[in-house]
Length: 183
Image (tube, rainbow, N blue to C red; front, top):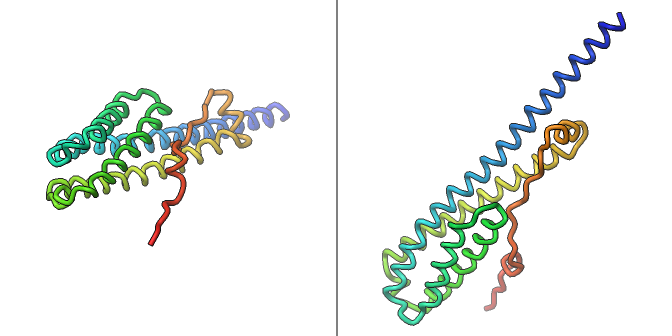
């Protein structure tokens, strides 16, 4: 009788462990999917930037440095390998795009250009999509990291070497602060 109870307990433990393991796998894949969603939007952004720079370049002869910085930042973002490097490169690209759009404000003909306006609209839409994808990714990372840190999941997570994921964070302090609006 004791053997049967021990055997049933062992089977229950194994089944429970399998359920936890499968849950952790699903959550890890959700995190990877979240990053893939960001990656898709970043690719869209990277594809729009050359057209944006080319259109702006027709009008902005005196602003070559700004255009070159955007081009360099785009290339760094495309070439970045690991997640941390990609995050840093994308944050840098975001700041160079902001400086480009600040410069565009000084060129009325460029602001009125239909192609520039359309590219600006597409890039703005893409930036919003990136923000939503980042939020989804960070939510999934949070769920996964909490799952591998809590009891009893942490036992299975350690046994099968599940590792934490990093959040996609803004590294530039200026981007974290609310913009100052003056009237």
